[in-house]
Image 1: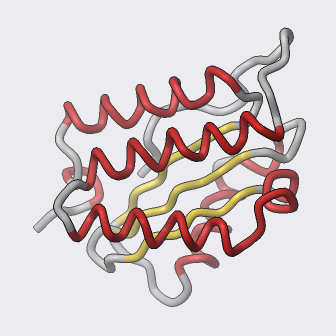
Image 2: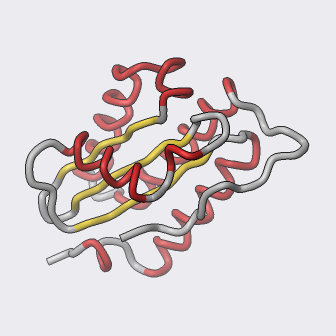
Image 3: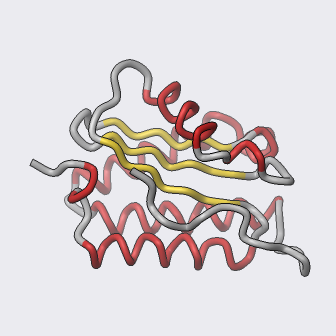
Length: 144
């Protein structure tokens, strides 16, 4: 049974971390990926708690995006901090989640998630382009 830690192979985890780094090349926005086994109740509420625990609400421009996956509960949420959420809205995140779920169902978990990460980076880049003094405010590593 694929738990959070072995849901992706080490090679796939490396692909995902590299996708985050690539997605952040053109934006001051920050993207994080969090995996856990179970989500009891709302995946949005669980993602919001993780968002806060990871300090994602502390970015200078309020432009962090969290992709949350509860592997055994089979739940996914994508949430953005207030800066990017105001620009894109809840419908955008829900469409992205639906596309991601379709990729998971097609057994393209890593490829689908990497594509989702790149798409988040493109959207962030439209509203929060990379600044000359930009620094990576949050780790690109997958959190568990």
